[in-house]
Image (cartoon, rainbow, N blue to C red; front, side, top):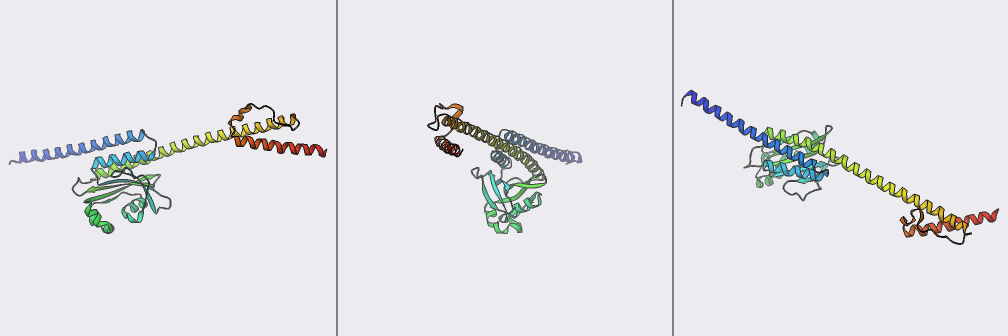
Length: 268
């Protein structure tokens, strides 16, 4: 083999490696686009997180892809989305059982364990990791305003593809998108809640207005009839909105008010 042919072969290998790298990046970009599309199609954060876990699991052929959200106090997290079991939606997890997850949540930095089965911090679950043929574990925190509010947890198979630095950076981008999606969903839910509270308040105010008008009308009717009865109301002023119990209570109050008025009249 001549020097010229050797150089040509080396260049071909570099070109093939570069093409593979570009294809890898293309898949990442497509995955990001799909995640953005799915996140924009729903404002319910659980659905958003489940779609992200599914997309990451499918993209990397993972053994496990889970998304956790932090709990107050920092001693536990909630498993809210899972690639391997989509039915899991709100499972409380003690952080002491997952030191790698605890470290990511407390430090706000990505934790990468290249050989999980032989990592000293995971010796308490070594048999499980060996049986599951787990290769690497990556935990990427989901941060908002420099505070970890959750984490994306990924486990690869020992026989599967290597989780590269590029893959880690990609998941970090997804974590950032996840934080923003959670923020948007939270704003939407707060707005919807406020709208519902406002509607409830308006209904209460309307019923209060109807009750007050009904009381005054019945009192005037009773006073005009000399205390002898209520007269015709025919649902005036929206009284049909009032429950039967409320109408009966108004009649009782009118009776009390008339008794007070009559006693006052005697005193004069």
